[in-house]
Image 1 (cartoon, one colour):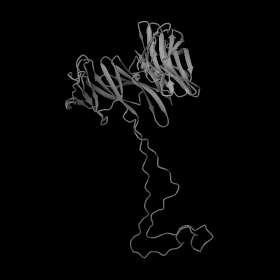
Image 2 (cartoon, rainbow, N blue to C red):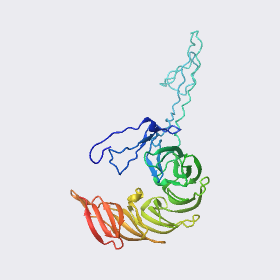
Image 3 (cartoon, rainbow, N blue to C red):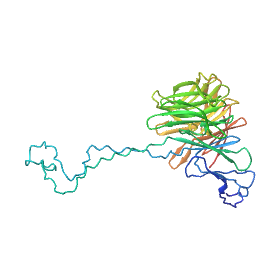
Image 4 (tube, rainbow, N blue to C red):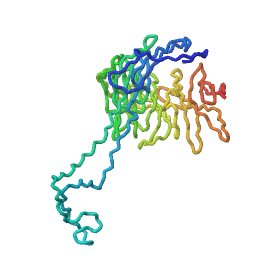
Length: 426
């Protein structure tokens, strides 16, 4: 660790601070550091603790830190050996038996023409040793079986200052999408995963006790032959989007952790890659529109009415053909400002030999999604060509909308989108 003044310090994790789950979780070491940002980094203790496990997805609350991993993502897929049409000749015996008569009519009598077969009759061996029985054919070994895909979950208690405390580890079938696939609520962890093999797939939501990560309940059968594209948990309700050709939006009742259940389903074309709450009974979905065969067509933003969990419905949709948004895979690129109903998403539109990038500003009311305008940044010139930088982040400060790209920061009026300032970064 290196402090602001320059001095650095190295620190190892003491053996007494290394834990391991009850079940084997691999040979990796997952280390969690606690850093007091009010003190000099090199002078303060990082209080590291470690667990013999791997980690790739992190989700945190005010009192818990969850780290998950999928330890078998690298597992090789077995390939069956090729089937050989040529039969294997048995091992020769001390006493040879006559082979079947040759069907060939040419060549010397008693032999097959150029076939390599033995004569029809051979003298019996005078060797007194007993005959050796033919070798039994060896049954081919069975192909290795791919172990079922699982997600391991490790919980740390961060409710007190200082070093976190390792609490428990657990696992659920399948693979989770991202940190939005997890949610802690009233002492339980809800986690959504997709379990797939080479033939089929299906998704489920599991409820685990936060203190032991033991499984309490589950609801499965979501999106047969599809996979999860987005998840959002809001209090005792869950929303899951799966997709292959159409987009089922499932609503889940999670009030009883031992018996979660599906309460509603909405099938529409396309999918939502990110779900964002928009007040009582409203949900924003950002993703791609698609044809009935599942071919993506461009960016879409939908407003859903989820006030009746048994009958979710789409109130409005805005569609921009041949485009994509960074917010589909990076939710930090999405901005929703409830005070005014403004939403901002980065969008790149594709035309022949040209890409147009900017921030699309929307107005989301209680019933409708409408486009207000688009903010673009100056082009960046590199050699003989130039390109328009993609906008990566947006924020509201006062009554102004600030957008950030690699070229700089632009400030616009939040209501009229009139440009107020441009701050270049190079």
